[in-house]
Image (cartoon, rainbow, N blue to C red; front, side, top):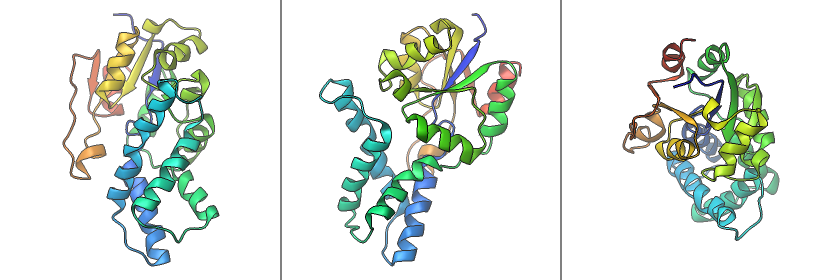
Length: 235
């Protein structure tokens, strides 16, 4: 196995804690405006619409649009589902931008910096460019490049999302390693020739009562967090 030249990172759930961040934001708004909501239930309901919204684009039933637009459409549905009708358009837009200010997992910034000492580090996320840039500035993540859905004009797990990200770096797929906490993301990346690194993020699911999702295949690297991954990669 050739050591990868670039690490391509999934972001939501792998690098940042979307569930707790979204839950905290909607609960803060609820307290200010005097309504009751379970933040984790709200966050889960919003996230559940993520894949179906992108599926319409993957299947050719809709042209490519940035994730911010899909998030907004899904948010309006979730607000209706939870009978929240007291937010202004400005407040709804600000809530939609919570995805631009999610908190990173505690090891993420230090781990990415260690990994960057030996590798190109870039996003390979379905998040759009503005979202990824704002998220990096909010968390202090120091990417070499923002790649993924909007750059490739394709949403993972479509092959173009992975292969075009590698190509933008001037690299072959096998010179890149996909880093993710989600087995399905890694399985797709592996099928298109990328190396794979699984990083466990138990709290993405367990914190809201879900089951942990351990590594399901013999990925090239399996790590408990980014610091562990950096050590195993010799960084």
